[in-house]
View 1 (tube, rainbow, N blue to C red):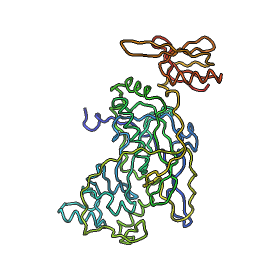
View 2: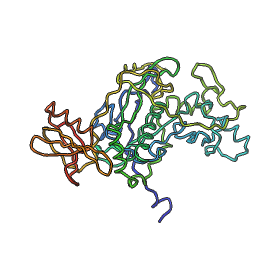
View 3: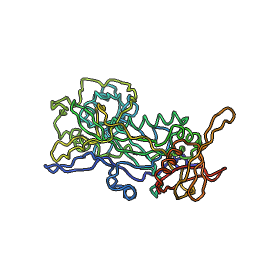
View 4: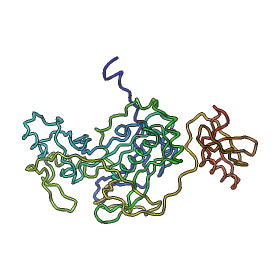
Length: 423
């Protein structure tokens, strides 16, 4: 055993699935702009499967049951060279000491810390009262890690977002699934979707595109999946790669070069506020307050359609994927859940053909009522299922007379249907 070497279990990170792209303004300056689809240019093996303008990636698997591992979140500020300040608990910030950072310098002077330029130190996080946060040098950032079973590579892909709605959406769904499965979320198949919603961060309505996780199946199927996975999923022992030092330049329009200019003394000593007024850059006389930030959780209702945001060619592009407002309106009702469960994995046998009939049989075992559905193919193949949604899907195919593919498990008694797919 070599400490910190042989005891490190880490999944490889294969690349980034981005929510924005770089554009060039009329003045020739690059800026990040939000997209209405996933940008897969950096991961061509994913783009080959899902296309250039995919708005849905399915299935995706979360590689761990701990949300702080599969979706770490923090307030983070970046320079061009990397991390400047980070707060993961809402209380303590880890910051790089720069003499031009009057806020940090004032704290070091008042506490008598011995810190050299370029070294990291800890200070109370001023939270949303911090001028760096108010001027979007610092932002809330979440990094979602997912496994993609359809992609012929093993490892995790990262999807970074600074959207309040995206972070709440992902965490709410993951937490709800964990409650229904007895603590399991890794190994559950989800769809990762980019959806349009309307928000009003400054009192004006605009359309933004946010992440959402969807489980497409019934609650009963979800509970059964959790029971089947149990507590022995081997992936949960693996750690995910460190990413905090990498600059997400597609999400920080005011970070990087702009923050460098302030910290190097090349920019004005004041920071421009969102209302156009000047603010004191460091508020040196105001020591940061020690704050505790509660984790917000709310359910956002999204519509199916919304107008696409207009492209910006000017010098004042809208910030990418940064919907600081809350959704204030909903569109038409969301489409119903899919009737079939996701495929349990490769290696299961498949049958192709048309479904001839669907019949049911009721019974009771040890005081528990059950219904067994018998599904018959037009060539005499017989299948069984206890799932009402699968039976409903099969019955629909009987009426339409469309050919299907049935994925089934033949390891036990009878051919138990796992999934019904179009042929």
